[in-house]
Amino acid sequence: MQQLIRGRVLDFHADPALTEDNHRHIEDGAILIEDGRIVAVDDYARLARPDLTVIDHRPHLILPGFIDPHIHFPQVQVIASWGAQLLDWLNTYTFPEEARFADPDHATRMAGLFLDQLTAHGTTTAVAFCSVHANSVEALFAAAEARSMAVVAGKVLMDRNAIPEVQDTAQQGYDDSKRLIDAWHGRGRQRYAITPRFAITSTPEQMRATGQLAREHPDCHIQTHLSENLAEIEFTLSLYPGARDYLDVYETYGLLSERLLLGHCIHLRDREIARMAETGSRAVFCPTSNLFLGSGLFDEAGLRAAGVTSGIATDVGGGSSYSMLQTLNEGYKILQLRGQKLHPLTAFHWATRGNAVVLGMADRIGTLAPGSDADLVVLDMRATPAMALRAERAETLAEELFILQIMGDDRAIAQTYVAGRPMKAPL
Ligand code: GUN
Ligand code: ZN
Image (cartoon, rainbow, N blue to C red):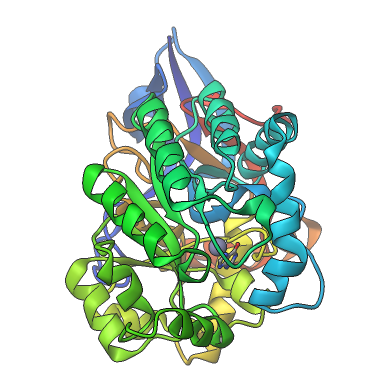
């Protein structure tokens, strides 16, 4: 059955930071969908037919759903934990909480609630770290499959420097990952990410096994963390004394490629930046987390100039909001402190097509192109009285988007569609 979704349609075909011709905005537009896919996008008048069901979202904006390329599923009850920076925060709050995911019932309950939070905030695809327990990945993929939602996820590999409840071994981590890849990678919309948590929590033996997984499954993503915090870097270099720098640990075990997603990338040396650019490894900026954990200020312009492609993500629960709008808000402020500017068109491109490009998935998500998946977010720029008051004086699309970027949160999400299905009760 075909459906027509009507509203102000906006999508991007290029990065506004690079190209003048970068977006399409249709004032009275419509998206024709069938079987979870986009069939056509055009003026409403050109697509309207008497036999079609029309869902009218005017005057709201309809964009491709937000993509969150770095988030921790077992941290839904870690978010907003007080007073620590990275390593203390992991030991005090995070590892004990992740230990609870050994219980399949807990993991299943949290998986549903986690995906509900994502869609309530307009996010239609996430790249998620699960806990060390294989059943946490099973629970997340099963919940995502039930919603026809595209999720990229993996069990964290961690065999040292954590409480025993959240440790595996090099062999068990390899075996579990392999089994999960066989069961879930490419099943429906699910994709597997090989997930060494970070160098501190993996022995060289586990890093070797991770490199083997990467070689055996070159179409899987790999996700980890890099240079988030100064104490983290110092500890890493003490654990890997032969490494030239932090990135060299991952490089030594063959992990660098366009499939590698490196969370944070704040305190990088020139060699690391050059190698990331040469290998196409991605940086992922996590602004609310970097402020919350006091980690540092991401250098977007510096990485861009060096040829590194960056995504932008929430990093819940180090991150303090599920909202990609709030993520763009805090990202704007971090870049202000760096003397850099995040234009609203660049910001909304980043959270949609930009992140899809980072994942190598721009043919299916982050776009409204015919044949792509009907994952959509509907944005209400007058969601609160303060936003409505400000919107009275907005004259351009960029001004309107900037209101959403700075003042928006889940209240501004009028609807979220996953594979053509509305995820919020209609108002
Ligand atoms: N580095 C290793 N694990 C984590 C994590 O869970 N959150 C963040 N922000 N950094 C990490
Ligand atoms: Zn993280």
